Length: 64
Picture 1 (cartoon, rainbow, N blue to C red):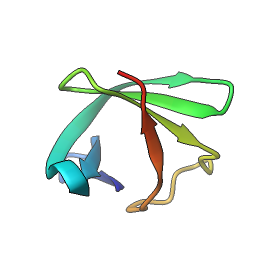
Picture 2: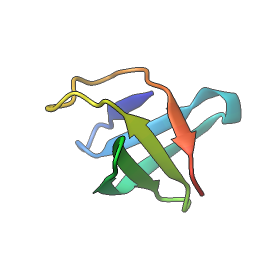
Picture 3: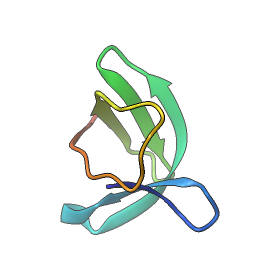
Picture 4: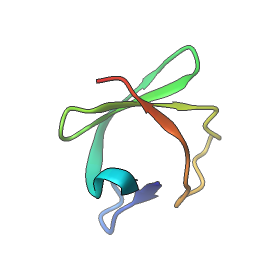
């Protein structure tokens, strides 16, 4: 799930891992965007709408 926290920062919640982390960078990729999280994970999201409509539940692929 992508959402904005109370300070306006983009956060990602991964339910299966019970993990909530802040997005520290966004990089364009061939299929969409790669979000780098505060814990070092990189998640690739395909076909994101611009501008983002949040909160939103999406599928992502973990790269690192």
